[in-house]
Image (cartoon, rainbow, N blue to C red; front, side, top):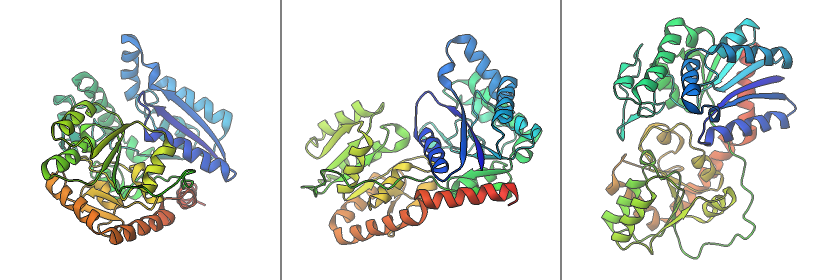
Amino acid sequence: MRILQLHNRYQIVGGEEGVVQAEQALLRDRGHDVALLEVSNDEIVGVWNQAIAAASAVYSQSSKAKVTAAIEQFQPDIVHVHNFFPLLSPSVYDACRSKNIPVVQTLHNYRLGCPRAMFFRDNQICEDCLGKTIPLAGIVHGCYRGSRPQSAVVTAMVSWHRLRGTWQERVNAYITLTQFQKEKLSQAGLPTHKIYVKPNFVFAPEPAANFAPAIDDYALFVGRLAEEKGVAVLIAAYVQNGLTLPLKIVGEGPLRDSLEQQVRAAGLEQTISFLGRQEKAVVLELMQQAKFLVFPSIWYEGFPLTIAEAFACALPVIVPQLGSMAEIVEDRVTGLHFAPRDATDLASKIVWAHQHPETIAALGRQARLTYEAKYTPAANFDQLMGIYKTVLGQ
């Protein structure tokens, strides 16, 4: 099969880019021809280019022509769009339609239901724009990058293509990463019968070269130190409840300085360690030795690769009973649930996990089995090919 991937890369590289690369490698390893047409937001420099990008976000004739040329050259059986925003724009669907090439669109976020793509505003869950034909609240609150003009552009893109029928008619299949995400985007107006659930995948980690059992038990956090990731809730759980189980925090972000100040003020420097950004191999080694991962995010999330990586390392995960996280991690099966944003409840779950090592180890073994059943490259390939063949009528 010949697959043309389309992707608009963000300026801040995240998990989405890794997913695109991994999926490309997966398909090629199994004998399929894959071409990637990629543009980058790094091209948006200066006021003039920003103005062009704003206009392009709604409909880009140049991107339509670029995709048309790529189709003519590569002759794909299918086009798989990972991200069109903002430079490629939904015009890419028209390019595919004109050449009678079916389109699959992976929805890595909630953009088609929320201008900010997160259902999250002012440090709270927000669904004010969900299901609205014209999501004016996103403009009023400047949800996209804190800018009303830029939010108006995103709103115009979503609304015009909804009214035009783009989302309903010009995409053959959508891929969401969880059932929760499917339900939210169905509420946003996408055709439910076209939405397929296919999670992300991760490659199984190699055993750490210098692996040795950890001298001390410890909990682990891996992620960006930002409000939406809930790391402040985790620190509060320690500070307010006098937890003594060592905690290792991997990651960087805008909250690091303030969180470290809180830890020092509470006299917990010997308990909580900030390790900063680490290479993937180091993170996986930390996962292989930790007792459990805490993933306290306060927004819905999409499909956090960190959780899949933890499962691959037989590491159970403590998550809030919220959004996709509560779906991926089964309570008392592959981890534990706590009440969202509740530092006291999170502390009680951490204490319970520390006091029940045999049960936590059993949850870890089940997490590994879940990884093998759902989140391996082989399992993902079968799901992806099933979607492609359905779209192609095979």
